Amino acid sequence: MTHQLTLSQVSSQMQQCIQNCLDCHSVCLNTVTYCLQKGGMHSELDHIRLMLSCAEICQTSADFMLLGSRHHAPTCGVCAEICEQCAQDCEKMGDDAQMKACAEICRQCAESCRQMSMAMA
Image (cartoon, rainbow, N blue to C red; front, side, top):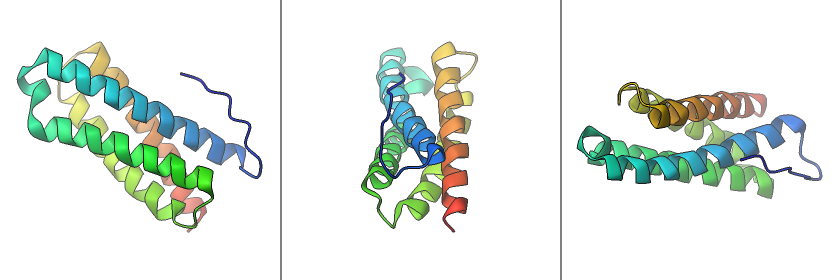
């Protein structure tokens, strides 16, 4: 999932945050499909809604950073919060490699977005 970003006027910290957001977006969408196929508690509405929300806010945060939007810091703050919630929810799904991978990338994204939102505060 590594894309090499060659971005002008974007710090290496922001480039890493953008990459984490894009990776989290992809993994969450992929995991939604996995959960719907798996069924049971994996396909509960609140869980699917949270994963889709996480994917969307990650995409939006990446877009705001790429655009140089002055609103990227608060957006990253919200992204960190939702990613952390998604990670916790995915961990509740049991000892499952897909869910663990999703929780891991969500936590990674949450941490980089938290740092990005504090750096600009």
